[in-house]
Length: 339
Image (cartoon, rainbow, N blue to C red; front, top):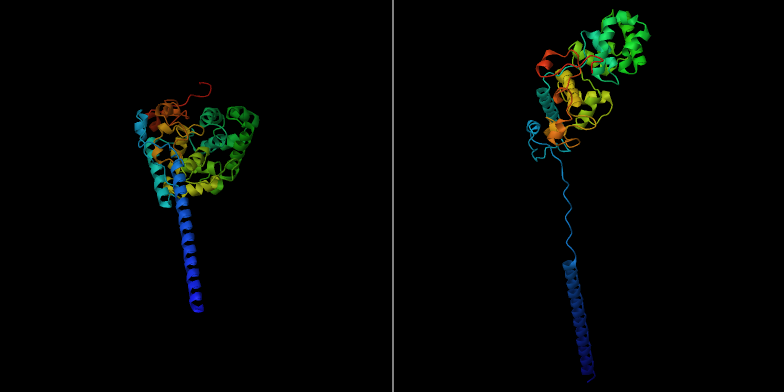
C-alpha cells in the first residue's frame, strides 16, 4: 500500500511537471508571435529609405568639330578611368598629340628670330611676359646690337631703355649682356648646340636650352613652360609639379623624335583654348580625351568667344610668322606702338 501511494505521488509530480513545461512553451510561443507582429508592423509603418541621389557628371561631346558648328554635345561618358593603366595612358597621350597636330599643323616657336643668338636672347626676355611683347621689343634691340660681341659691349642703360616694355628690364639686361659676354669669350661668339653648355649661360635654364636646341638646332627637347605644366596635369599625364620631373615623366610617354613638336602643340593649345582661368571646353578638339572636361565653359557658342589668336580670328604673337601660319589664316602681330 505504501508502494502504491509512492507511485501515485510520482505520477502526480510527473503530470505537474509536464503541465508546467507545456505552459512555459505556450508562453514563449506567444511572446515570439507578438515580437514578430510588432516587427512587421514597424516595418510597414516605417518610411521607405530614399535611394542616394546619382551625381550628375558633365561629359564631353564625341566630336569637337560638331560643337564648333553649334550642335549640342552628345551625352557620352568619355572620362578616362581613375585606374588607367600605363599602356592606356601612353595611348591616350599620343592620341591627344596626334589630334593637336591636326588642329595646329602650323605650330611653331612664337618668338621671332633669325639665328640661334636671337632665339636665345628672345627666350630669356620672354620670362614673365608674353612672346608678343618680346617680338615687339627685339627688332630695336637686334638692329642696334646684331651680334653677341655688340651686345656684350653695350651700355647697360641703353639696353635697359630698349627692354623696358618687357618688364624686369634691369635683370633681363644683366642676363642678355652676361650671356653675350659668355658667348663671345667662351664660344667664339657662337651659340653652343649642347645642353650642358647652354645652361652655363647667364639666364639660361633647361627650358630655354630646349627651346634653342629644338628650334635652332633641330635637336629634340621638351619645353616645360607654364602652359605645358598646366595642361599635362589637367590631362593626368603626370601629377608632378617640378619642371624637371614633368619633363622626365612626359618624355617617357613619347618617342624622343616627337618632343619638340609635342611642346609646340601643347603650348599652342594652352594659349588658344585651354586657358588657365576659363578653358574653352565647349570648343576643345580633344574634349573626349580630357579628364578635366567641364572645368571651363562647355556651351559651344560661349566657348567660341573665349578663343584667342587665330582661333578667335585675332592676330598671332609673331610679327614675322612662318608662311604656313599665314596660309592657314593666321595674322601677323602689329609692331610696338601700332596697337
